[in-house]
Image 1: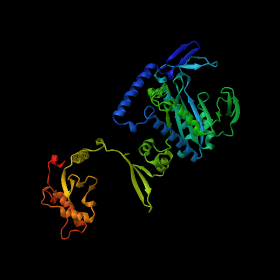
Image 2: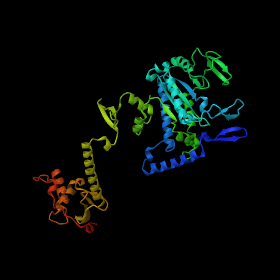
Image 3: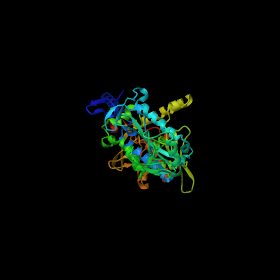
Length: 457
């Protein structure tokens, strides 16, 4: 097991969320290798998680939580804050009433009682609550939740859930929950207390609790004034080490990584996370709630094969326009044999053109030129005249300059490019400065003068 117990004079003490030094060393080495791979392959700008780009990861969590709370407020929902704890057999130690820590005789040391297995049990416990009839009968827009898995100091996980439902359904939900779970396995706080629950002082928890009967082993407390602030306290508590120093990983972060346990989950109320991460580069979709509204209204559309995301908008005339805001890069594995051959052929043709254009730009053909006694250079590759202070092409010359320049060109002169002569002549014809001469195809001027490169430079 990964639990490390240190026997001291006052009893037993758990170190580092139940992680051994070997666990921590091995995990830090794995993180270091993974970081090197991400940076070497150029994935750094697109990667965000608890141990890489932690700032972006935390910002996204805050965006998701605040958007969900804002959605619940729009629907006039109230919150139930639920804490679920694992049974005794998952806890390696226990604390006595006098504060002494001892080894738990009920603890079962096997693979079915590890933190990873415990997190799955907590998820099943939560799923059982969602399947209760008063919760299940609510419409989709009448319920939403987000939940956080957090470790005790011993490394055993427990679950915090913020469930948002209508106030008139709270009583039935509480009665159904307390029929299957009781304190201390579950604790509940609520924004709204049903009239059938009366206030009693409970010595077990040493605070006022609302119960139907003072002898009941279950009850609900009212502590939530600001639901978002209340839940963010628990969310950020699991991220404290990352906020203080994002490059220093404490056992808290390593606990999640080693056991493969996710911190934060939400109901499928908001826009799917994979879609949001593709489109949040646009300012209007950076707020998750705004993106959700557009998604629910059908203005954000996803193709059947999830390769294209489009946004529908209305122009000034009331016409619907479609804008592609994300498109998946085509993979060869997605194509049939004929499509694959065409794709490869077009890929190499494009690559050939790109290579030739890049080579031509890097090694341009330049010849000397003299106009009205002024020495210039002409770039045959880009079809433009280069002067010391400016770049001049026939298309940008004024009429008088173009007319003078054209008549200064001698097509019989070996230093003049016939191709450039044709470009200049066609520009004269377009402007009406030459008559009775048709525009020629530039391929007709195929006797292009070529100057050795050393002479051109």
